[in-house]
Amino acid sequence: MKTKAYSIDEYDLLGVEREPGKPAFALMAERGTGRYVGSAFINSSRAIRERLWQHVQEHAGPPPKGRKRPATQWVKPGLIGRVKHLRGEEDLRHASLQDFREE
Image (cartoon, rainbow, N blue to C red):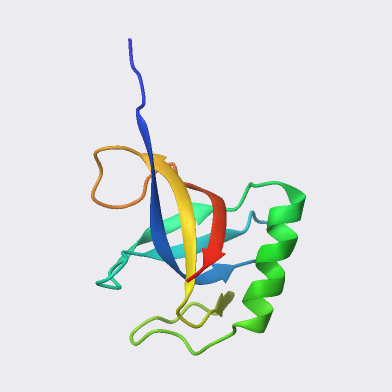
């Protein structure tokens, strides 16, 4: 029997990638170090998604050094995302953004 164990942790939100016809996802970094750890699908409730889009628009910022993704809306530091992801992995796998808050 195969089982998957999940963990919920907080990460810095670097930006949101949205492309027509594809699901949106958030780019996440390790808190403190800023090391990119992966992306998390944004499949929260409609209210959370709309609040996130509004915050992303209000906190738009330049891309981090060395990051070039044309469909990404980058954000200034200060948004923290709560992410559910597969436990025991160094980078995010099977991740989804549960909620976010301002620091």
